[in-house]
Image (cartoon, rainbow, N blue to C red):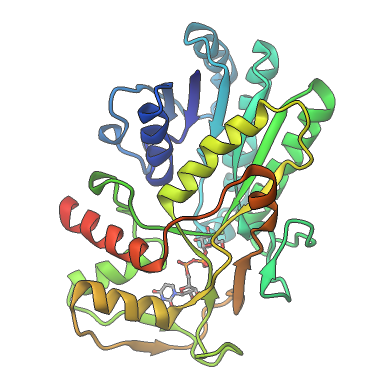
Amino acid sequence: MSILVTGGAGYIGSHVVRLLQEKGHRVTVIDNLSSGYSGRIGAAKLVELDLAAEAATATLVELIKSESITSVIHLAARKQVGESVTKPEWYFEQNIGGMAHLLEAMRQTKVDKLVFSSSAATYGMPDTDFVNEDFECKPINPYGQTKLIGEWMTANAARAWGLRAVNLRYFNVAGAGWPELADTATMNLVPIVFAALDAGKSPVVFGTDYDTADGTCVRDYVHVLDLAEAHVTSLDYLDRDTRDHSTFNVGTGKGASVFEVLAEIKRVTKIDFEIDLQPRRPGDPPYLCADVSRIKGHLGWTAKRDLAEIIESAWSARQASS
Ligand code: UFG
């Protein structure tokens, strides 16, 4: 297959690209290189493009035709929750505007298979531990809203012109599938803790008084390579004539608290660090884990790697990239 991956030079995108290449697919990457690196995509063709730019649809149409693209995996998006709160208009322009151009180009070229990178941020603050896909989505920030609207856009395109789409709601992604594909941004717990350790500082824990077993927030940490495999499985699913669902959680179905993640980091790094206990960070749900029965039942996908493998792979990739 000839597959277009938007955001393919990013941390998650580059894992998807590498896996597709290993399976013998031809891959074309679109990335604006705002947080991605061209060195991550191997022999894939790279087109530097901001999907939200006015001329993007025409460029996409030409590219889809010239590369004989048959399917699209759409990951390109702005993804910083805090930034989305301060710059909401820009988040809508970038994430929704970019996606509208992509869908229009797919419609014009009759490319009808799309895997869309959605997020557990669509749920907001669910009052349940293991959330399933039918739970009412009430995103609490513009980032999560753009992901939910993206899901609506795929549903509308399915009705209007027959798009086949899978929306993957990622939970907390971490780890590395290859040493050179580390998460080099310091936006999430694991890389933030590594950066603190590099700087000789104490990692910070936001909130120790939650109603959870050890008082810290619980999340569902999924290995980035498992997540990449879910994309490949989704492409196969899109070839089926009958598909009962288009939205799937991607997690492990197991929670880990912030203290448990830090304990694992201590074990793997062998660094005996102190912890800086801070008050709660606004907007953090105490517990956000995936009910994974739908993706298991309908796609046959389950996460194969556990928290130990996530932290071990993340740490060795960080060592390799520093
Ligand atoms: N945390 C700390 N200290 C830190 C950083 C984070 O204690 O220095 C805590 C947070 O308070 C939270 C947990 O670690 O309880 C995980 O925080 P992250 O910022 O790594 O991740 P979030 O769960 O807040 O959000 C992530 C992604 C979102 C996505 C969401 C979906 O960043 O894009 O998962 O579950 F939408």
